[in-house]
Length: 510
Ligand SMILES: Cc1cc2nc3c(=O)[nH]c(=O)nc-3n(C[C@H](O)[C@H](O)[C@H](O)COP(=O)(O)OP(=O)(O)OC[C@H]3O[C@@H](n4cnc5c(N)ncnc54)[C@H](O)[C@@H]3O)c2cc1C
Image 1 (cartoon, helix red, strand yellow):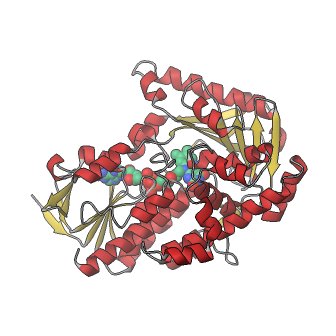
Image 2 (cartoon, rainbow, N blue to C red):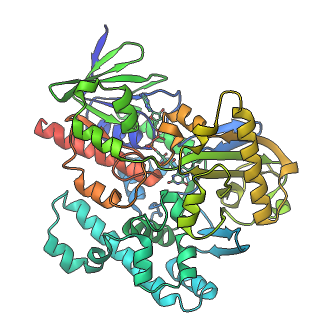
Image 3 (cartoon, rainbow, N blue to C red):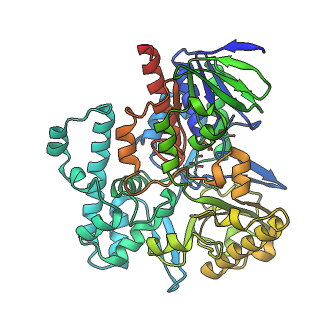
């Protein structure tokens, strides 16, 4: 068997893996990045059909900002030396949300004052509670920075003194806190529109997690790369090789080798053995324990933790190239959240069934007018199933019929909700089901948002416990199924975190 040696092997070139690999290479570590696809990015990619280049995943970046007002992601891209190599534009408004239940819709702007004022127009007497919400967002942001800087050893007295409101709300879900600050129910419903981005409803999702995401979106606005996610992924990969890293594309890591409860290497699908003491893995832990580590080498607690978690939403997406302009179609908004009901707890239950067409639709031309040829429009739809309803229903023989039926249901729901006609103008259509996503990234059951992040297993306790969960020394996880949960900014930042922890372990010889 052929053998080569690296300091660290990063398995998977999704957002988390790319950042982890680049950070390690920049720190002078001999790093190998192994990716089973022939391009980097995982979900963060694009593809072409006819005269259209479709964004595969991203609706909008969170925690990015701009040169004057940095989010954490902007700072990270600056540190990694890639910020000037990617062009970004602002998305024009926060969202349009449509309720099918009562045929109402609300368009919300970016900017905290604009958002609060618009809400007051829609829901008189909401101003005071909305102001408290955003003040809490600011305090949560500062408290999370303190927790991050304290590296798992925060001083409770400092927390109580400097971040008392953060401490008050830290263990509650969204509904509990919004009720406590006396936000009118209708304002709660509109404010929680983004819930599906975190894949858990307001009665289960941590207030801290939702509040910080919304605060960052509304205060920093949302951005997208001009040349789709593919550009971000390619630039990160290129910077990695320029920094001395090696990438093997079209290669699958088959095994993580373990001896005496420490990683000792990785075996690839071409039987090449890579000797290394450290692995950062961008794949889902359940897949790793099921397929990549010998059963008797998996620490019991690591397995227990993975098995105790539920998968989050399984993805269903439709990509349309239309041969009419957005003006001709009457599509003025960038993102349309179309729900049966604005009550996220009910909607979450609805989304456990195939008989449900709630969706988030992006009209890319409303942020990037030139993203498709003149007189055409790109629309992409994303929906989630919060159960294994798709894999239960699908068979080898009904796959194409099932996916066509579901796609038709989503498109007709969109037409009805927005009072537009798009079907006759479809020039290109591509449909991705949970099976497509599972096939492309090895995400279990096509779960595009990693693990369900809710109740007691939410972002905060995950981050607080990460130093104690070093069950298999030498192995760290990054990406949407790791501590920060899913999303572009979370997965990129998780790569940075995994690299920092690995560098610390290397220094201490752990
Ligand atoms: C349709 C859709 C819309 C979305 N919209 C948004 C949005 O608007 N905003 C947002 O923030 N997030 C969004 N997301 C979520 C976001 O795309 C993900 O959270 C993020 O891309 C996950 O990154 P990751 O680091 O977990 O890597 P992944 O994308 O999961 O990639 C993992 C990589 O590891 C590789 N791999 C796995 N196993 C192996 C192995 N054994 N050997 C070699 N390689 C391996 C895979 O091939 C893959 O390339 C969306 C996702 C989808 C699908």
